[in-house]
Amino acid sequence: MELTQENLQVIFASLTITVGAIAPAMAIGKIAATGLEAIGRNPEAAGDVRSTMILGVAFAEAIAIYALVVALVIKFVG
Amino acid sequence: MEISIAAETVTHILGLPVTNSLLASLFTTLVLVTVSYLATKNLKEVPKGIQNVIEMAVESLYNMTQGVTQDKEKTRKFFPIIATVFLFVIISNWMGLLPGYSTIGIHEETAEGLKLVPIFRSANSDLNTTIALAVIGVMSVQVMGISILGAAKYGKKFINFSSPIAFFIGILEIIGEIARMISFSFRLFGNIFAGEVLLTVIMTIAPFIAPLPFFGLELFVGFIQALVFAMLLLVFMNTAVMEHEEEH
Image (cartoon, rainbow over all chains, first blue to last red):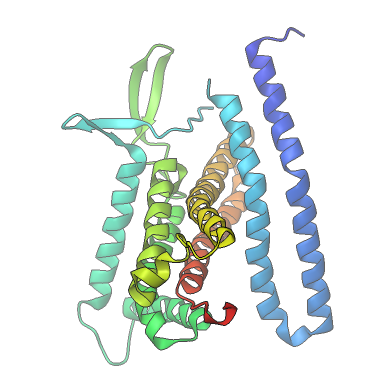
């Protein structure tokens, strides 16, 4: 395979999202795990824990979204 | 499959480009204004129909604000901007999923051949819209801080000559405010734009039935992002107006 600009763009776009998704994946896993633990210990607080957990997951997911935006910029711009 | 990160220019008014996301955000504003006019046209003691729905939405937003501030005075100050931001973001996110958005448009001659320029495009899938929202949000945090604490007391957070450490913390706070704008705008833009790309890709692979669950996901993401935007703004406002007497 030749290393044309287009091929390089595809390679680096995929690398960006691959590396960028690792940390948010671990963060979301940790948030969900501790959330479930908290619900297991105190089932009455399930509603509160769940809504806070979803907010936390949204923040962690935002990091993956930043990587995705960068990947899309690499792929489609320039 | 056509994906463009920048919003496409539909027309020019007095030499200024009018993009499809600008048209979509104006349309969102029109919908919000019309619905609130219809809901408040003849208010009744016992709400019915559309007034009931709007009252429910406004009341739950008010309770959310009250739950964070725990103070009637602050809630009255914060509530209008929090609710406005939340409603604008959620309605424009959901309206971006309507049929016709980024599908109906004008064919335009370009260097690479015919190109479809959609008339509407989900308002928050353009970085300009989200940056505008973020700047309004962060500026309103400063306004709240100054109006509740006073300019001198609030300014001390940023410019403080009492000790070298306090001075550097002030500089860090200024950088922090700018970073907030960036994270606010990129989070919303990224989520909504990624959703648009996801739907386009799925519809290219399998046009029938398969996109349905993803539309459900996008409805959820649209709601969560609106909630995150409003909630963060609320928390920032609440911390901006807190007095730091106990530290000294």
